[in-house]
Image (cartoon, rainbow over all chains, first blue to last red; front, side, top):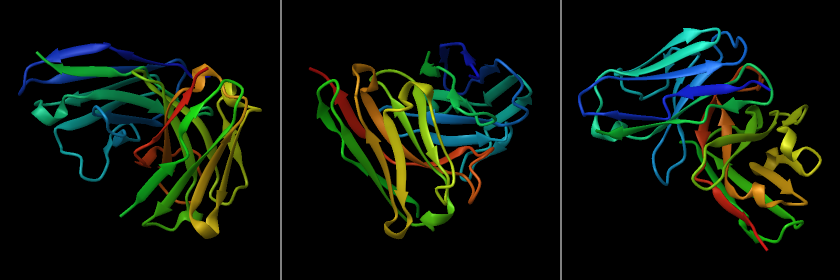
Amino acid sequence: EMVMTQSPVTLSVSPGDRATLSCRASQSISRNLAWYQQKPGQAPRLLIYGATTRATGVPPRFSGSGSGTEFTLTISSLQSEDFAVYYCQQYNDWPRTFGQGTKVEIK
Amino acid sequence: QVQLVESGGGVVHPGGSLRLSCAASGFTFSTYGMHWVRQAPGKGLEWVAVIWYDESDKYYVDSVKGRFTISRDNSNYKLDLQMNNLRAEDTGIYFCVRDFSRFSSHWQPLDSWGQGTLVTVSS
């Protein structure tokens, strides 16, 4: 089973600052990686797929990079609505697996 | 727009059974692979199962193999998850999720999510 490891577990950031979230796969997954955002009491929302492509309606301050085993989600200037938990997920192999999540909180 | 509405959650004793359903609308259901993803209270996301758009293939996470069965009714836009021999660790919110693109479920992110239904396994 592909293991996805996210870091850090919690990221404290001030509004307007940049946030960088990392995700590592235990084996190469090419660019078959997605990022999801989940706010309390809500279902997850697809943000990024193909490691770098923003989903429909996602603001350009969200960007993804990486391939193989190392991936990054960057939020260039955090807005109040961006404080949430972010998950990476590989869709290269079965079973699909998620990282444990990174909580982005207000500093 | 795409709408996915789960139902069937509730409280069940260990060893019991429950059947979850997901009513889909706003898209051509018969052309998309569908998934169940769960989330234990206060924990992260865990993918559970997938069924191909035409039921030609299914995959499960190891922890539910032999206990859970995913199925669909394309005529009625419905996705099901039959859960047998439930355990405490099956407790959580179960989300119904659609593939990003039509037809093959290989190499597809998870696109549209329902709001989930809560399953509690407790004695």
